[in-house]
Amino acid sequence: MHRNMAIYCARSFTGCTNREIGQYFGAISFSAVTKAKDRFEKVLLSDRTMRRIFEMIKRGISRFKGLTPPTPQLIGMPYSPVKIIGRDPP
Image (tube, rainbow, N blue to C red; front, side, top):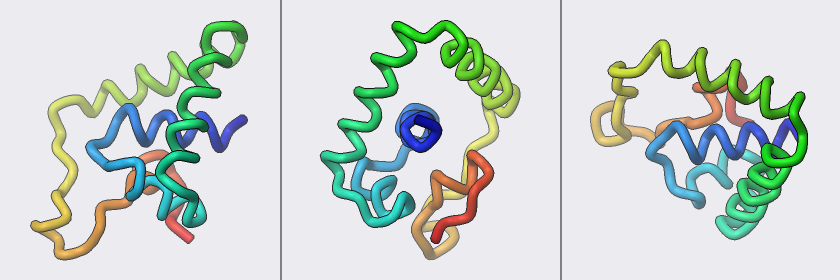
């Protein structure tokens, strides 16, 4: 469940594609990223506790609104959506 939340956050709060996100979550396919995101959306609709946790994360991320992460072209390497949520890529 937490992995699905992390994938959902990476998809929702970064400009990364499903393929890029999949690379950082253990080389999963872009369609698996979509499925994980869809599964977590269903959980948000049915699980009040998970929805509260997600809202706290969302509020924390919104504090950084206006800060633009470096683009891959600027730093010369792929941007890691996982780094945003506190986990280094494998």
